[in-house]
Image (cartoon, helix red, strand yellow):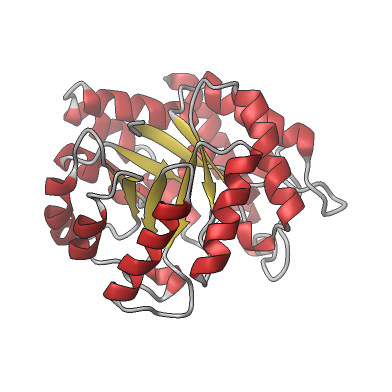
Length: 295
């Protein structure tokens, strides 16, 4: 299974009651598929995985699997702070219908590189679905280095790597790892065009919740070698990228999605977007609509 193109890390919509908003969830998935999104991430960082219980986690995957009906892969976020817990969560994801496990480095515990290699190897050996490694050290306090990724990339059940560090020098060490059996995926929206132009196969995006068609188009342009036009489209997204960094993810993107009618908030300890930023959220929603209509 080769991952490529625009992959959306879906927000999890909640109703005003605080429960899952199932109609909004189905509508979000439909909108992504109509827009040409290549795969979906369920219950990742943007999906507030830490705030979901096992029943909700499974329900979201099952509903996504039914809605997608095999048209595109579903990745489920399964990373936990302990290896045994991650294995258990990955088994659950598979049983609920996920095609791939997206496994973030263990938060908070700060293992060594050898510990990370042992961690991912144990999960890959146990799992009946393939893994995509995920590095976001700004959130986890743990950095999966390119050399360790290289060692893990030869495992037949590890099929990709999402790198949220946008540093160009780091990516120069990663590009040689790309192969038909191992996908390199940007996890940093502001730098994804440069990263894909350099050799990454795709992006796992937050912004594509709001502009899925634009992201699909940019990825298609890059695959066709039209880097200049891809860059022109990406430049139109700069104010959106700036807005999405105004408060911790997924607070800003969920403010935009609320403007679209998808969900009503977040779960504690995350709070809705600060009141002083709400006018900007409305402006960003209008910008997203305009860009989606222009593709």
